[in-house]
Structure formats: structure tokens, C-alpha cells
Amino acid sequence: MSTAVFGGTFDPVHTGHVKMAQSAIQQFELCRLVIVPNGNPPHKADITVTDFDHRYNMLKLAFEGMDKVEISDYESREDKFSYSLYTMRYFREVYGEDTYFIIGADSLLSIHLWHEYRTLLKENRFIVFPREGGDELEAVARKYRAMGSEIYFSHMPMIDVSSTQIRSKLSCGSDCEGILCPRVREYINKNSLYGGAL
Image (cartoon, rainbow, N blue to C red; front, top):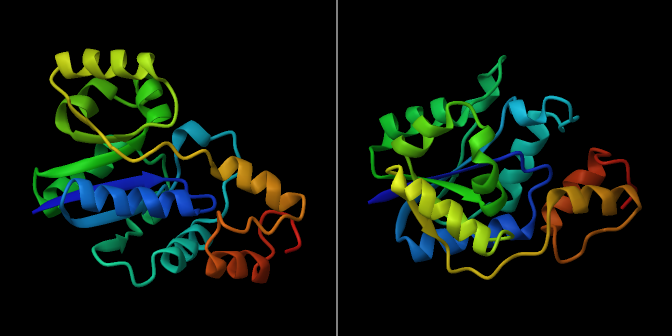
């Protein structure tokens, strides 16, 4: 009865995130997938991030009615930086040690920059969604496995979409049809997010 924690900024959540969640549930036979929007991520300290409540509300809309998915506001209480090491310790305490941590390939490639990354790697089981890296990604995974980390790769095809690209498109007036859930598009329009008129 495995659980997975899927963290990220989700600014905004897009259809790629939804497909990743569905794929993880199926491939790893998860009983629960907990989506955790970042509260105050240290790696984005110099970047303006949309208010937590907006990102949380958009996640609720994007995953509405999806079986086995929960949206957590755990990091909303953080007035300091939110570190994955401590967030994962909390969820393993709640759901047990058989809890995966879902990350993207770019995160695995840069995880050596994260807070106490060696401890994070040793304490957790990872599901990695490839998006970039190729041979380098495989080499990094082998290195971390040798250090004692459990790393598994998703079989899902790569997704060529990012929240950064979507914010850029929205600021230019695109409605991002096909890459944003209609309910999320409506929410963005209603709340005048990302500087574009849909």
C-alpha cells in the first residue's frame, strides 16, 4: 500500500502534471498520491512565485474527482524555507516508510544543490520522470544508487511542457488550450493571474 509525495511549485499546474500523477499511480500501484505545493522553496528565493492559495486552489481544480489523489497544504504553514528533507520526513511519519518522492529529471540532476542532499537521498525512495539528461541522467542515478538511494524511473514518455513556458504564453494572451485544464484557465482569468487576458 504505497504512497507517493509529488512536490513542486505548480505555478501553474498543467496537464503534464496530471499525466505524471496518473502514470505514477498506475505504474507503481499507489494507494495514495499526495500533491504538495511548495510553501517557500529556497531555490526560488529570487523568483516571484504566485501566492500559495492560488496555486493550491488551481491544483484542487485540476485534480478534482481523480481517485487516489490528495492535495496537501502542509507547506503553507512555512514562514521559513521549505526543505524537501523535512517535508518527506513528515509524510513518511504519517504514511509509513513505503513512501516515494516524485521528482523530475531536472531535479535529480541538480539535487546535489539541495539542503542535506546526501541524507535526503539515503532516506527516501524516488520516482523520477525523465524530461532531459539522457546518458547523464542514467549516470547520476547509478552514482546515487551506489550511495544507497532507491531510484526508479517512470515509463511515461517525456513531456515537453513547463510552467515557465505556460506563464510566458499566458502573459502574451494565449489561452494555452490543451495544456491547461479548462477549470484552471477559468480560475486564472477570474483572478487575473500571470498578466494575460484570456
